[in-house]
Amino acid sequence: MGFILYLIVGGLIGWLAGAIIGRGMPLGIIGNIIAGIVGAWIGGELLGSFGPSLAGIPIIPALIGAAIFVFIISLIMRGSRKK
Image (tube, rainbow, N blue to C red; front, top):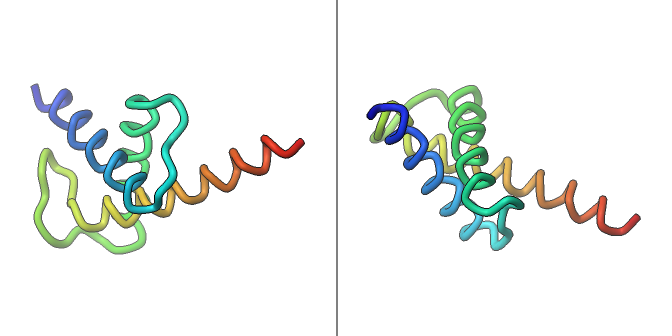
């Protein structure tokens, strides 16, 4: 049950980061889950783990990390469409 909750929280964080940045992730919900989980890792490495956490994911660093990840992916995807 913990793993499923981790995926759900990761998906919500990825979706919220995409909404904040104004750009969605490719692959829909799978992309959001990946963005949330990778964002949690990026945010944890850059900012540590502070603030509230849910399913072992610190919310604030994960959201910031996911926003960074979504922004970088959107730049890469935009660059690949121009070719």
